[in-house]
Amino acid sequence: MTAAARIDALDTLSATDLCTRAEAALSALVDVMNQETVLLRAGRHRQAVSLTAEKARLAQDYVVLARSVQRQSARLKTEAPGLIDRLHNGHERLATQMAENLRVLATAKTVTEDLLTDVAKIVGQQAKARTYGKTGTIAVDPSASARGIAVNRAL
Image (tube, rainbow, N blue to C red; front, side, top):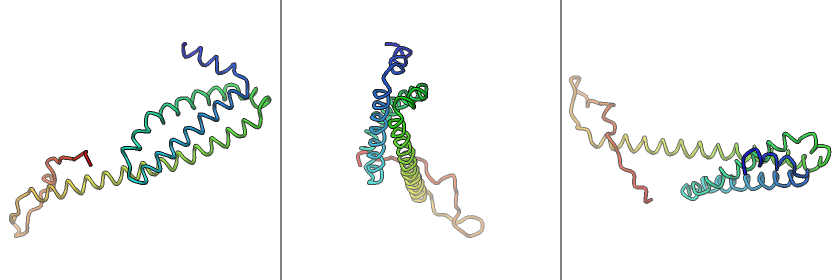
């Protein structure tokens, strides 16, 4: 089935079916993002990464359904106003969950970058020679901070 045929098929669904599918996709996406956020907060990054493919699939499904809802909004407002209101509320939950998820991801990224920078500085300090410069102080060469580090991914 082509993409155009799938879009046409969605656009011809009854108001109840289209809204119900969109709400189910939205709810599943919010749940997966919540799981990912909880795992990242707990420092269980590998388990969080395992949700990436499912999150991407659910996001794609939701976007396709949301676009169909947008195209059919006049009809849906007439035929299923209560379901449209539920979708709006669900979309607000998604926005809240996405903001929280992005905050946690940004924090994890910052912590990782800080940790790697600190390790690189320590490794670089251990590797450089301790000699006195022309002024009688220990010379500091910022370019020698780290020439490379190995990361044990088994942890």
